[in-house]
Image (tube, rainbow, N blue to C red):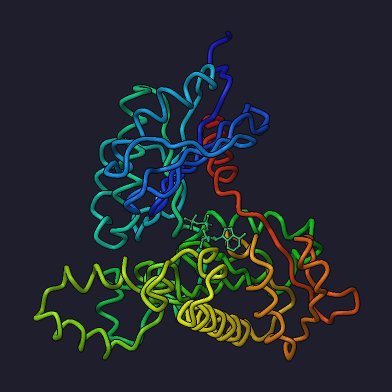
Length: 387
Ligand code: ADP
């Protein structure tokens, strides 16, 4: 093989309870994709490779750091050939990182210092970096940040209504899910809405909204940490800060207990008392499951309205993420409530998972864009290799 030539680029996307991975050729053709899901849920994690049945992988007490070395050695490397570079999703880049960057010791320690701002994600992102560095020493590794896409949000929306000295110390709204939104942005011209005001909803375990103008982020529902904005699987989203103060007092000042409540025990899971998984709630006949779903949709449409108001209008709506891509009932409930904004649902298209969800005579259109953070990561690695 000539110098610099390689067979594959590896994209690793370590989420709160999953590890998604994909291999791409130098021409960005995907040769492998898969995920390990249900990590840290008290169940045996499952490995799902595209086109194959789910299989148990590891044990229920194993976390990301335990599973990654075996995943890389047994599943990824035998299918990869020569790996030219590895890209990692990193949730929080803070003010330090606003573009993809080659990882060295100082970048790795910068990423580690931001871990307290995304405790449910950043340690897993670091576990991915550590495992890949151990398995493939000397191979280029690139960190791609979920916050970076939102660096274009204007200061008046990035800062919070607090004394501005805090903003100068970095207490600002960073926004997240940026790799997913970057993929949405690159899909807009295919949908015929590359110009104008697009409200994109990434609805997964974590959920957020991005208001874009001409494909650039101008508004985000998420904030300083991934706790703000929409109701999520385990996180509450926007809360009255007075409620947070009351809770801290209730826990006798124990911030760790409060953090556990806000990152792991709230949202769909906390409200329903059943599950944070939308599929499980939709399948349930329990009134509390229906109540949690109603709250999720209510807050979703309210935040879409807020984004549209900030953008001074809306030209198109995009659904992405596990719920946004797959759940026709959630999309239908939201779109029916958004009729006043000019969205006329096409129920058949919605049920059929069509790319366009609205009727041909709808004043504005809503679309599905399948999330593909791995492709965005692989492109960043290819660009870094090209120098
Ligand atoms: P993550 O944020 O961890 O990447 P995903 O984007 O995979 O998560 O989204 C996970 C969420 O998507 C879960 O709540 C899951 O129940 C939901 N989901 C996946 N498929 C469906 C479906 N067919 N109907 C409803 N919800 C679904």
